[in-house]
Amino acid sequence: VEQHGVVDGIYRLSGVSSNIQRLRQEFDGDRCPDLQKDVYLQDIHCVSSLCKAYFRELPNPLLTYQLYDKFADAVAIQMEEARLVKIKEVLKELPVPHYR
Image (cartoon, rainbow, N blue to C red; front, side, top):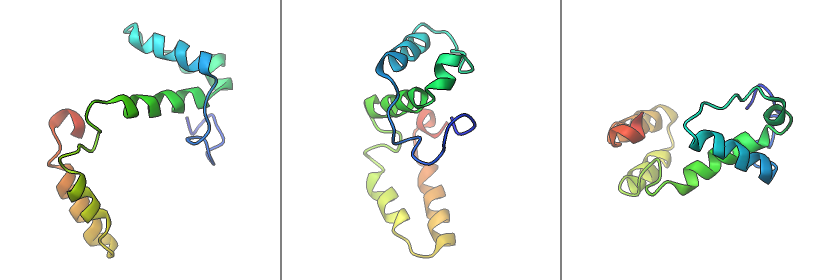
């Protein structure tokens, strides 16, 4: 996404709905979509839009409801080195599929 788009705002702007649906169908069809197709390169926002939709539609968020408070506490640590250590500790508590 960042190689083919203007990075500033690329994750905030939405792609064309028809392109997002076309890309979703390719993923749902167990195919590995060719993201080098002109349709996706010309509308790189459809790739980031579908990625955001995927994470929004997960039944349990990637960083899980169960670990939310621990993540919130970790990111609130002022000292950067200590914050990173704590975040890594919490990440290790994620379920295996989420951690991968």
